[in-house]
Length: 148
Image 1 (cartoon, one colour):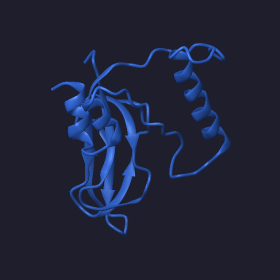
Image 2 (image 1 turned 45 degrees about the vertical axis):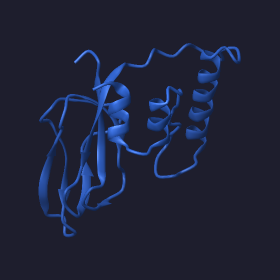
Image 3 (image 1 turned 180 degrees about the vertical axis):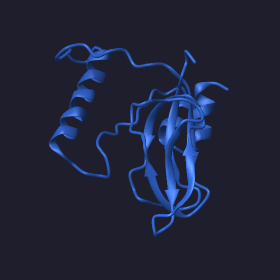
């Protein structure tokens, strides 16, 4: 399956996936977490926007060049099948291997209901930070690099 099919299948109806199906470049401009607007996140978002504009030759580059992004073939979404509290043991940008423990789901009293293991080898690129999760909620997304 190609990148476009994976994007549309992973997040149906998402604007970036729909744009990709129509051959229109798109990005997800997310920085920070939990809707918090802090100065460091604002500066990262601004730097990212400037880098995009510079790569399109719309403005001069500002600051040192960043490393090229790592190409990924697919995004593996892990979702919960139960109502629980979510306790991840990984963070965004960490590499995981298939079967590695990445967290657990607990009941409201803190008793472990189940351990969670990585469904693929790759890089954690999306991580839910809310404690309460319900059946069908995403927990994390693992980007599978092209090289694997």
